[in-house]
Length: 212
Image (cartoon, rainbow, N blue to C red):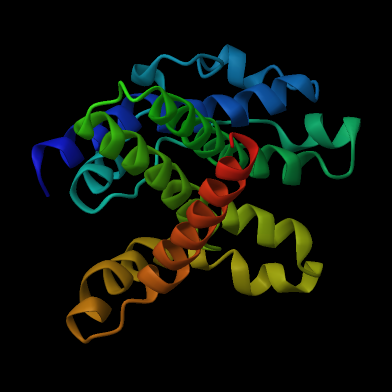
């Protein structure tokens, strides 16, 4: 990891993760739940959102998480039966949106010929990191958004199997992040990096067609 990659990861830490958590909070507030506002999470201030372990993970390996935004499921469900699902989806979708904006900005600035090489690479990495965060958070393990999404979409009898995962989540992450890669099984790479690179390639393709 070079200094440019570290700098971009820091920018993701102080922009991408707060945007992700603010999106959760904003969706909950929009659906009629004031819990995030009262908890001080209805803000883009990184200090309100960052989690120590998740932040270190982002800086070291390129993906991580912030503190989960508290919300009242019953409050959002009063507005729509899909309230909890919408709150969970808001975070990954915000990172996807940041990736789209970054790619399009990258292509626009590149056309001017004034973008330095380091800026060219920084924008590419920032877009990629946002897609990494989006796909990483869609993994169906607690405390990630994918766990809540799966619980909302799966048949109710699945809860007896999904709820116990919460007490073993840290052990599962250690296996996925440390043990399996040492054995030659990059499961997270397949679940996160591969789809992120595929989507990034398509975004640049679409952007290039739009800005011809």
